[in-house]
Image (cartoon, rainbow, N blue to C red; front, top):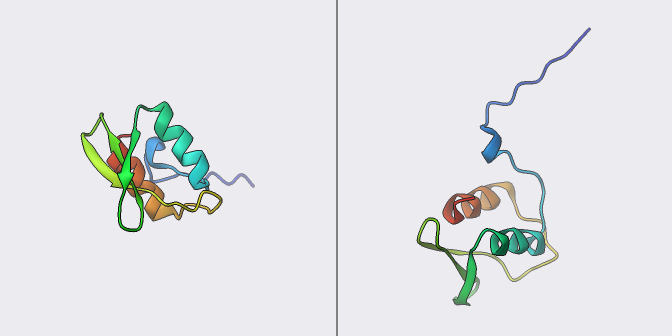
Length: 77
């Protein structure tokens, strides 16, 4: 018996678990940069989307999937 799994998500939206430190490396590589500290979260800027977005200061924590998709959308990745 052969089982074929089909994902309904586009390939660029498929995400895996990632720590905030790894996410920051990917953001920097894509041209995003740290702007300032917000009240509770660091603020980053994406020149691709011309948007500011928040990340977390907890570098060793896993990014929740909804949060990761939001950050990737706002950063243009």
